[in-house]
Length: 111
Image (cartoon, rainbow, N blue to C red; front, top):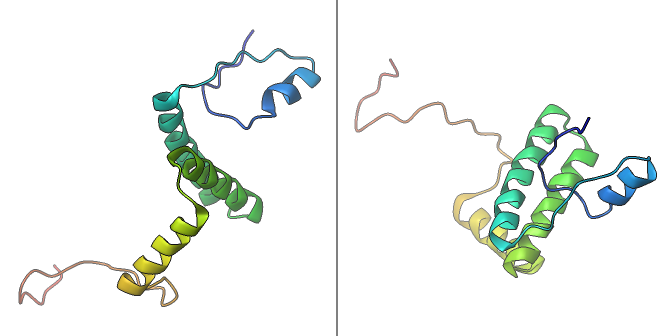
């Protein structure tokens, strides 16, 4: 009986599966499917990091980000420049600010 996954996996996973005696059923994604699957994979890895905030899970998030950069033809330097630009414009997260609500106009009640 086949176990269904239907997800993007790392390049060596099929060989690892074969080495265990099982047979992987795979296909190579075209550009549109690959882009969609990268987005799905990023959500999957972020969820795994949410459930287990470990360095290993964060490294998986970064691996998918690097694959996204490569797919779009963007560089790590361009990503870093964009991060710095947004930080200069909007700040970072060091102050741990949690936005609870926004009052409209001069209304001072939160009810």
